[in-house]
Length: 138
Image 1: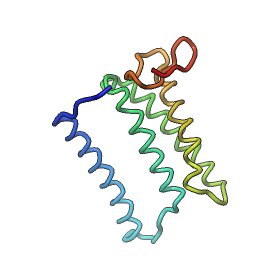
Image 2: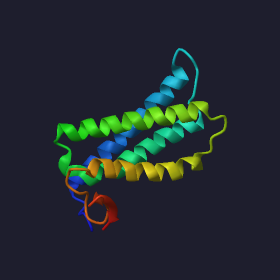
Image 3: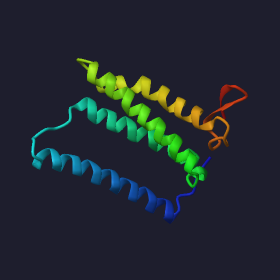
Image 4: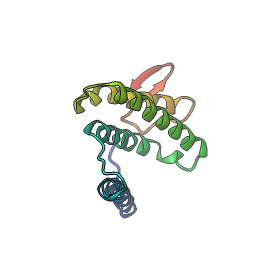
């Protein structure tokens, strides 16, 4: 399914990119000029990238629900669980490679989609959804 690229959509994407770049620049500036010189390790940058990828895959699928407060509470709670669980794993692991994020990240995307699809409208056509108590992909 092709979604037309309208002027408003381009502006939304550019705004999202600018916000993300500003957040990264803020972390880097604080790390460089803050009271204590520090820089997050590669594993924490990987968690940040995984979180951005997870939300950028998830959120556009449910654009029609953005106006619902319950949707944002659900996404917020899932994101908190995601960050807390990964923080525990990354803090306890002595060695962590960036590619190790890929398999669990793919499972997380499916879990996010399935848990958000339960009892609600389905995501766009061409994407997986939970229907009749089993995972189906259109």
